[in-house]
Amino acid sequence: MTTTDPLVARMRPFGTTIFAEMSALAVRTGAVNLGQGFPDTDGPPEMLAAAAEALRTGHNQYPPGPGIPALRAAVAAHQRRFWNLEYDPDGEVVVTAGATEAVAASILALCEAGDEVVCFEPYYDSYAASIALAGAVRRPVTLRPGADGRYAFDPAELRAAFGPRTRLVLLNSPHNPTGKVFTADELALVAELCREHDTYAVTDEVYEHLVFTDAAAAHLPLATLPGMRERTLRVSSAGKTFSCTGWKVGWVSGPASLVAAVLRVKQFLTFVNAGPLQPAVAVALGLPDAYFTGFRDDLQHRRDQLVAGLADAGFGVLAPEGTYFVTADVTALGGRDGVDFCRSLPERCGVVAVPTQVFYDDTAAGRRLIRFAFCKRPEVLAEAVTRLRRLREH
Image (tube, rainbow, N blue to C red; front, side):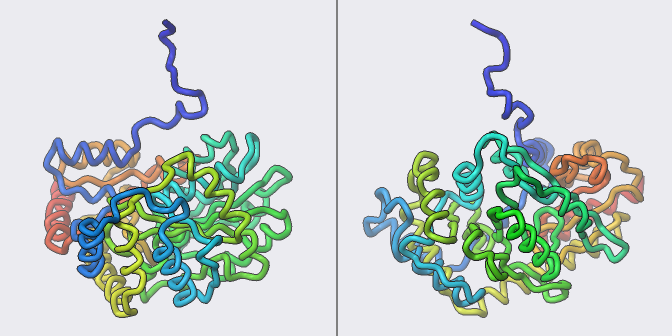
């Protein structure tokens, strides 16, 4: 028997995720875990009650392949209500095992080996893995913080990333891990290049309801721009908006031909998922506006709490415009490498963060940046800040 690594070559660069590594470190050291982006409170009671009722009333078998009709209708109604986007629930919406499967199935459905995928770095780690699984090639465009603290890209770099092998652009806005919300002008350039090169777009919009009131731009789905609905697969999920990350209920919306392609791949990945949870997510999507604004405002308060605490502890803080996350520069605290800094942080002060350089191809661009999650209870954030202040004492 051979002793070489049996894993296919294209997946060998992808080891245990940084989230698993840092969460295990948090457990081992008893540190406050601000690394992985999951809330420490449950979602809206109406949703939880609907899930309990579904469990008791016979919703425990395979749901339909595209998702139950009630959830697909709720997804379509939600997008009409908030974004003025029209999708037919019977052919233009498919339910997935979270946004991670939605992105993976979209890339696997659309990309042949050797096709190129334009994406923005730092990127969520599953993007690179999904592109590799498809045998495609990623073409990253680097987001860099400017003098105003906002992340932006060089339009010339974006133009240069497109070429004859470009198959799709993968766009995440609001953006993890930077908290950037892409502006209308930035999105217009992305749309222009997609039309010029006749490429598809896959948009990860799981933080669509977490854009803060002081952001420079409101959330604008790329599919709303001229010529983009017919070439865009729009991805979102219940996990972030309704604080139920463990449910793994996501969806893809788009033109029927593209959604059908995604479904043909998805059926051989998970087949179906979350039968008794789908009715509950349908209920959650129909909650009144007050839920969505209240959820955003609560997270904005927690963001402000952590941003102030990090600044007081000596970090260079890049305040986010949306999402669950804040990025901080460790230079002023003597940090030269974010991975080393994060691995030592639990022992030094009892807090876990995630190094953002692992989300870059250009690791130098993110070498001194780390990411904290603020989707935690205020008392947890307060304890984390108290511990982080110890860094200034050493």
